[in-house]
Length: 561
Image (cartoon, rainbow, N blue to C red):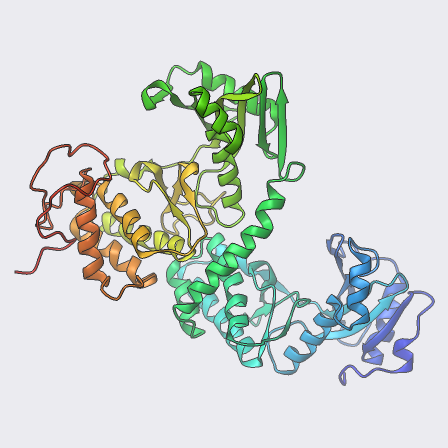
């Protein structure tokens, strides 16, 4: 086949298949007309939605070519007028995809081979390209062992390096648009309707930021993601691009996802009002709350003003949090800003639009009397595992593995601008990965935050806030539960991934400041192995955040002589 020359024959509308072919090899176009005139193939529809439809056909050519016909619904989709205007300007999704495929394929970059472009009688536009045998990269990675995963990352880096050299960006670079081709084992880039020439380095950083967020959501290990950054020459400035993309992504997604009628449904019963995740039926939400009320194992909190209960319903476990109505002033305040349950539900649902880092909120209910909210309930998924402040590593190696995983995880969150206002061990649940929810087992520890009201970000991370969070976490874990070597490993992993802005806060400087703040909190950490114990043990069992405690030469490692 000799390229994609246009001809009068290519442009005419075939009577059997009313498509005006605008580009493509005449032999390919003839075979397409024959294939489209016949009955559809079994299972030919790959994807169908209001924006586009993908289906496959086999062409009667000597090589027995299988192709994908991608119909962009420019005239029959959700926004026909807007799409027609784009088409008139030569910027329709189909035209952009065709141009991108032609440019990238000509440079030998791993993309499907473009074959034809046309317009249907309806006004919809079509792009035809060669079908690529393979598996989605996400699935291939999940099914691979450690060595195979390393090879997959190397293959992905090679494809992205070639894309960078081409001077173009993909525009929608995420795991869903990456395919592991067989038998070549190349990573193929799919869906190019947003592709264009890069206008500068910021375009490239944003393109990779989209992919990096996708890899974070899929729980790809930090070490492998670091390999990608290094291969692509992306330095610390990539974190700024990642934060900007995350903030933009969340603004666009959260407003739509929290609007009742999509992922969220209203609950309105006599004296009760609230919201629920569509994954939980209203009858189930009410039954779970009723069982929690009757549970004899409720844990009372805040001097009886709140309680927590774990219940089982329909073979699944849930956590229910109840908060009392409070004073009249508190009820008026709750009417303006929402009850504790409503705020936690909204923050948790919003947060999941970006990353899975906390327990999933499934429902919130408020008692409503005389126009003011009263007591409230929050229903959460039950997160398997143990609170970090209750964990006792069985060996130094286990403590070291925990510290490394926790350092990587927290550094990634802070690099994204995500924080938690109450980051203590009791609000952090840790467990081995769940294959159903987290991906393949044996791929490190998983961490989930429990107190949704205190979720923060994304916002620009400040050194002071980061140090305070690290100190709060460090202070909540007793010396005997996490030895000095593990704490130092945690800090080393954290700083290596996301260094502080202040040059004085290198690994040693940050360690001294974290230890000083930890001891000032007078919680569980006493600095015994560090040679930086408190001079007074008064109030050592409290969780005070006061800086009034006096300490001697603090540091996460012994002070220099």
